[in-house]
Length: 326
Image (cartoon, rainbow, N blue to C red; front, side, top):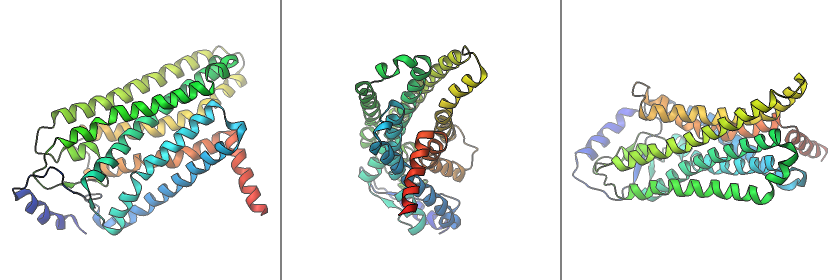
């Protein structure tokens, strides 16, 4: 279906005098690439399946192996659970739009999807901060690691991450409830993204825009600073360690976490900046990046930890070895 086919519908709806408080929305998918959407859906589907299988495997391995009930792996299990929700809140509807043209999404369903996407993105950022804290304690205070990060503290950190995500992002759907939509409710996106919905409203949206920007800057700003401080202290400690081999071993324990941080923050910040300030970036490029941002980290995180973390790698090899013997 080409983009031209959407124009009569858009003009008809825009010219009408309707004022909708609770409309349904029409997800276009990837505007400008309508002829290629079936092919684009294939790698997205592969990424989603990889995300589901990888993160379920990580959670299962950590859950069933008591030797992995340590802070690093418990935080990794939290990350995998968040990645499962994040990918599953986006991919099924996106694939339905691209493959079978199931473009319509109800108002309430759209708000729920938007809340899950943004809330769990915030939670993932929070877990990355917790993992940086774990690496700091393990390297800078190794003798007190189990005392400082005992199970009670880990549970409290996990609850704080959950509550922060829910409290900060709950106003998103609440503030959207006050908006009035009086023109075509066609979203030029593959899923319900906050700013894409806000731009459709014909009522005042200053509060929505300001709060969305404030939350993004607060979450990313605070978390990136916290991670930067943790790794600054780690670097300071490691450089004091005598012997190159000891330093390399200390750095290697942080390698997988640094890779995950880069995979999560770089595409996310690029997507955020282009959505608000990148007016010269082609729209289909932004939509593709925004969609990949929600699928690539959940798909790659289990691979990164599976390859770089010896304990996880050994458990995976053991599981497949047992299956091979059967």
